[in-house]
Each structure stands twice: as C-alpha cells, then as structure tokens.
Image (cartoon, rainbow, N blue to C red; front, side, top):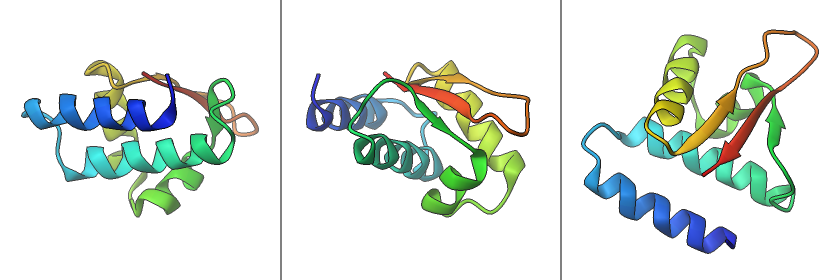
Amino acid sequence: MDGLTVLSEFFKKAAKDPRIGIRHIGLFVALFQMSAERGFDGPLVIFSTQAMQVAKILSTSTYHRLMRELDKYGYITYKRSFYKGRGSSIYIS
C-alpha cells in the first residue's frame, strides 16, 4: 500500500472513531511523515523525543498515552523499547 492510501485510510477510519482526537491525529501524521522520510522501509525506529518534537507534544506521559491508544485502537503497532540506547519500533497499519 502506498503512503497516500495509508493516510487516506487513516482519515476515513478516524472520522468514524469518536475516541480519536486532534492529538492522536497530530501524532499519527508526525509518525507518517517520519516514516515517509525514510522511504516507508520497515518499521519506524525512533526515540520518543523525535516524535514529540514533530508532533508538538511537550509531555512524555501524553506521548506514551497517545501511542498506547493508537496501538490499542489498531492504527499502529507500537513496540516500546525500555532501553535508553534503543528506539521504539512503530508499524503504521
């Protein structure tokens, strides 16, 4: 599936999902952009600070809550890394 199709499907699904708010959308688009910059090649491996900067999220607790919810709701698959030197893996559904 190409990038435009993924983004279009996300917005169609999010429009019908009352659980999704503007912060979820902002974070998903930030993750999508970061993945696009890397050519959609495999999982997106990033540190929380990178995504937070792009999505304009200031609180780590808000970031982790949004990531857990996007994962729970089926928009991404989030494999959090608990090691300082290793980024988390994100698969965009």
